[in-house]
Amino acid sequence: MIGQSKKMGWGFTAPALLWTLAFFVAPFIVMGAMSFAILEGRNLIWGFHLDNYIELATRPYLWRAVIASIEITLTVTLISVVLAYPLAATIAFRVPRHLQRLVLLLAILPFWTSYVVRSYAWLLVLAREGVLNQTLINLGLIAEPITLANTRFATVTGFVHFFVMLLTLTIYANLIQLSPNYRRAAMDLGANAFQTFRHVILPLTLPGIVTGAFLTFVLCIGDYVTPHVLGGNNELTMPQVIMVQLGRRADFPLASALAIVMMGMVTLAYLAAARWLRLDRV
Amino acid sequence: MTKFRYVLLGVAAMQLAANPAISKELNALVWCDHSDDSLIKPFEEKYDVKVNLREYEGTGAALALLEQSRPGDWDVLVIDGIDVFRAVDNGILAPMPKDQLPIDDMFPEIVMAENNSKDGVWYAVTEKFGYNTISYNSAKVDVADMQNLSTVWSDKYKGRISIYDYYLPVMGLAAIAEDVNTADMDAASLDTIGPVLDQMRSSAASVAGVVAAQTALATGEVDIVVGGGEWLTAVLAEEQPEMTWTIPDQGAVRWTQSIGILADSEQKDLSLEFVKYITSPEGQARLATSACFWGMPANAKAGDVMTDNQRAVLRWDEQGDFLQKTQLYPAPDTDLDNAMQDLWLDKLSQ
Image (tube, rainbow over all chains, first blue to last red; front, side, top):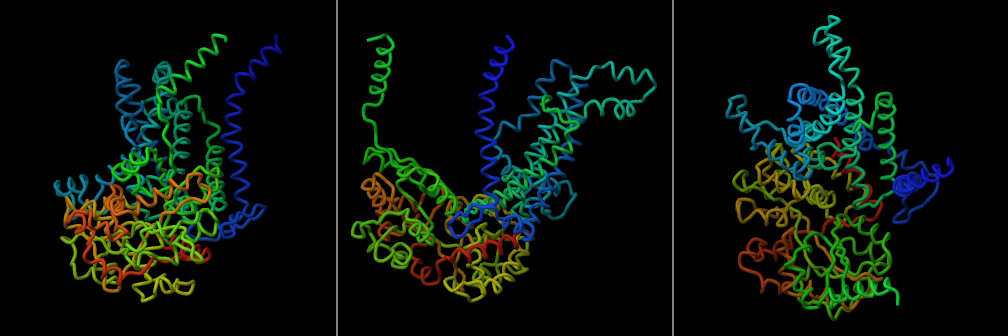
């Protein structure tokens, strides 16, 4: 009986395992091996060469891309959490239960449009003659248009617009599972609203926050479109540098080394968040 | 015969009925200007063939894609004119019969035998060309300033320029501004070009691809695009005639694209017919005014089948002067290419 159920277990999990082996583990091994190869002319030389990693450490534009990617990703993650939490809490605690689905639907409406189109739309909003500058001028807050597009501010804005929605969903999923009795018990014991939030609600919703933050980190650090369109290429991030290596030079070894470093950063983020990470809450 | 076999036979019969004439297919690896029904449909109808197009950006990406494909997967390749030698050296292009190509009808400067042929054998033929020069909003800048490259990226226009995001033409323009011929560029000339790139970079609001540069110009985010040209402003010209371009007094950079047949193609005759169609006056006129981007047709006879307005937007009558004043953009070997790309990325990330 046990043997049969074991076989059934393998039978059910085999497709997923094979899928993971074929489309994640195998490509990852190839990419790892490729990162130690070198390109001589158009010839790929396999072996254990550290050239690509040495180049990464010694070429200023490469490590500047690493730093820019980390700074942008951390900024976006932090701002998105700060904005998403109150939104999720308002939906979970203030909006009547029967309207919550509708409000969530409205909150994720931006997901329905193309990511690229949304980025270009933001470019039109932030342009010197765009909606935002014209509004500020009409309100008398500024005399001349200010440069908003093609800056890190624009990149972060585009990212935050997208990721606030994602984080709202993960945090909401966490908040909605909390029994109201926790709040009532805290209040009964004399805690004020802030203390209830600080010592009860926040610790209990940390898994939702961390899960959303981790997903934000992963998606943001690997994104090519937003820094390219909204940042105006004024600072390079790692995905952009990887694309440049592939486009004309077809330097797959260096691109692979950069991708491995990027995966290393995601792994570090995972380790930092692992204690609270609950991907089943997504 | 079992019921199952009857079912199989029935399904096969239905398939045949649904596709009474299974067309041939031609697979072409192209630039986005070929993905235009008005260009491809006439050929498909004439030869009863389905042309499958796959767009790519960057010769490296195309070569990698070909390496990963099975022999015979691809029939036709559109490639940057300066990179034909890379494809020939890799043995991926098939020889083409010169006498069946409209080489005598082409603008002489665009034939580029040194690029498209090797040891007298033709492997590709130029199909389109244009300029990486200065595009601008004539209502916002002093038009006379646009004739001098160093004024274009001077502090006078600080924050009002965008740089086209492709290092070869932009570095070619920087070289021309410093009186270095693009054909003479070497590692030493990068020292000369570096400070020019610094100046460009400090004046630029953005470094943009085609769509972003067009958007920036059209929305007033910038007034000048360094590295732009007819391919950038032609699609804006109808609604915003103030968007135009010029070749500065020092000159500018010329781009070309070539088309060839892949050595592993199993349909070389049909592929040759496709190349002949694309380089015919009719095909050339359609390619020149493709929805993705406009550019000059390599075949001068295309002018006869283009409208006056189309020729005006492309500055047809000024081509003689433009061809004299422009240089092919740099065609570096691998080492110089890597050094140029590193310098470009270094300046870009500052």
